[in-house]
Image 1 (cartoon, rainbow over the protein chains, first blue to last red):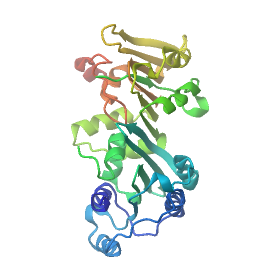
Image 2 (image 1 turned 90 degrees about the vertical axis):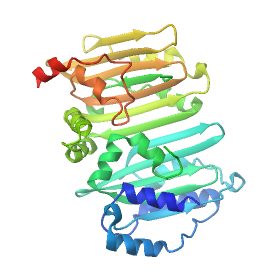
Image 3 (image 1 turned 90 degrees about the horizontal axis):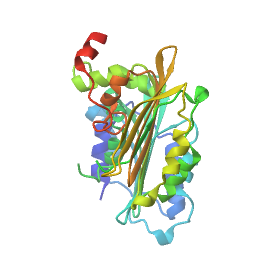
Image 4 (image 1 turned 180 degrees about the horizontal axis):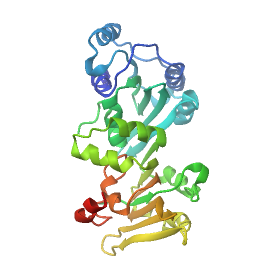
Amino acid sequence: MRSIPVLAAALLLGSGAARAADREFTEVVRAISDEFHTRPQSIPLFGLVNVFTAAIHPAGTRHIDLAVFEHLSSHDREGRNLPESILNAVGRSWKPFVQVRSHKNGHEETVLVYMRQEGKEWKLLATAVERDEATVVQLLLNAEALARWMASPEHCARHWNGDVTE
Amino acid sequence: MRLAIVLLAVLPLAAQDIKMPANLDKLAAKASEVVDVSLDGALLQLASRFLSEKDPDEANVKRLIAGLKGVYVKSFEFEDRDGYKESDVEEFRAQLRAPAWSRIVGTRSKKNGDNSEVYVKTEGGQISGLAIIVTEPKELTVVSIVGSIRPEDIRDLGGHLGIPKLDNVVPKSDKKDKKEDN
């Protein structure tokens, strides 16, 4: 289960004030749900995680929105162009930041990372879709996290979901 | 380095005088891996504020991106050597013509098929755009950098902001001259 490494990576990479997920996050989750005719996994105690992050601010994080899909099957797919569906769900208010599409050695992965400025803060909306699993995360970036993403956008895009070892 | 790289530096879209050829986008369908990085001016300047002055590497990047208005990277990796054609690159290269553009670096290796070219655009005596093309047999990367940068700083940008390392592309700058310029 990738939820724990995903959460750990997300906490390390982002921070921000507590707030609800943006409509775009919900729309991206819906796009994946519609494509694979499934719903995101229920992450046990995730509510407590946000209580914890709101109180302790690990790595500066006070809130995180996360959706994890597992056991996706190509047989259940609707057949839409998923990156295009995600792009439509994200809308124009988010700037495309990093996109990685890979299908090497039988491994398929698409990573789409968008950024949006809100006042003095920057939000990051990242989606990683592999053959049998997908992850969507939205978070606010603190200064350190933003600098990391700026310095090595491709590296961060490849590693944010925690399933690739360095 | 088994990489084919095309590095481009151009003006902002509104004033952009060279364009990414549509055939480069079409290459995505044939590539086994595509990486696309977009850093606009607002992101770059925000990052500049947050990069550390204490860390020598970050401080160097902070200095380098101070004059940049955008960095756009496209890289393609192919399973086979025939993944892209010289004509795919030529369509882009054709836009980098004098007098606006001038090539400052050009290397070609018959041994391993690696090619690299660096172009700059100057306006009023200042570099306002930069194009670096490096090709290798099975990989291709396009990076578009907008804004002013000193030629001797190009190498230092490699490995940052999604730009591939340029150690084998751009000769090492003369640190003495660099210090005097500063």
